[in-house]
Structure formats: C-alpha cells, structure tokens
Image (cartoon, rainbow, N blue to C red; front, side):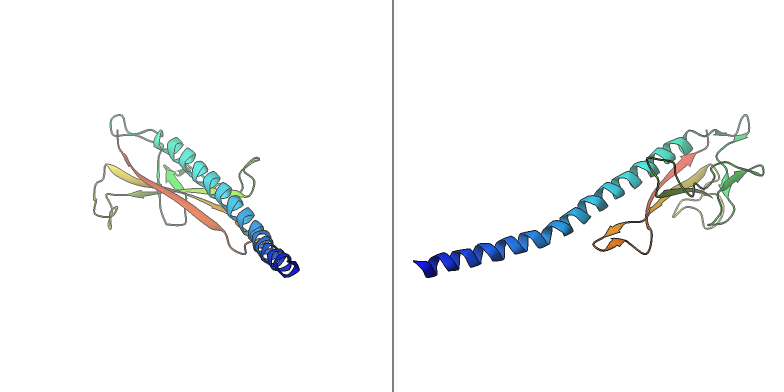
Amino acid sequence: MLVEVLAAVAVVAIGLSALTSAIPVAGVAVSEGAKLSTATFLASARLEKVRTAAWSAAPPVDRLGVSGAPLSPPQSGGTTTFADEAALPDPYAGYSRQVRVLDCGLPPGCGVITSGRLRQVTVTVAYRPVTGSGLAALDKTVSVTTLVAQR
C-alpha cells in the first residue's frame, strides 16, 4: 500500500511540475496575442483614415499623396500627407506606425495591376514583442495593404 501511495505521489508531482513549466509559456503567448491584435487594430484604423483622404480628378485634389521612395512617407505638392509616427501616445506607447503609398500607374505597377487611377496603400505597425526572458531584441511588424481608387 505504501508503494502505491509513493508511486501516485510521484506521478502527481511530475504532472504538476510539467504544468508549472507551461504557465510562463502560456503567459507569453497571451501577451503576444494581445500585442498582435492591438497592432492589427492600429494598422486598420490608420488605413481607414487614409482611405477617406480626398483624391479626385475633377476637381483635381490629392490629399492621399505618393511615397517617392520605399522609406519615405507619402507627399502631395511638397507636403507630407501621412507622416511616420515613431511613437504613438498612451495607451499605445511602444507601437510605431507608417504609411506608404505606391502609384499603380508607374512601373512595376501594383502586382498585376497597372493603372494611373489606383494607388496601393500599406500601413505598417511595429512593436517589440515579449519573450520568455523579457523584450525581444528586434521589432515585429504587422502590415495591412489595400488599393484606393481615384474618385
């Protein structure tokens, strides 16, 4: 009887130690999920703001702009339309956001689409993920892309 009790205690101890080692991993996964969801929300919210920018042929209005280079924010008439946000205010401290606008009428176009009446908008949000030993060394990014038609 004593041997059976000792065996049961050993099995329970092994199970509990395995369970306690999984708790930090689960905590990191929950934290990463929350950060990833927040980054996706921030990208989508900025994309909706960009999509409402006026861009029309008649009358000629361009508040959307075009990025002159992959690392530059969009500009229209020498004015930056959607500036990079290196640090967002609370409660989104730790996130940064940038908008890039590609003219689909210029080579190489936007994938298989070549049209001067379309622009490809990409919003990228960066954040520093949490690892089991603290913050990661490199940022993680979330990008959301859509096409915007001239109105």
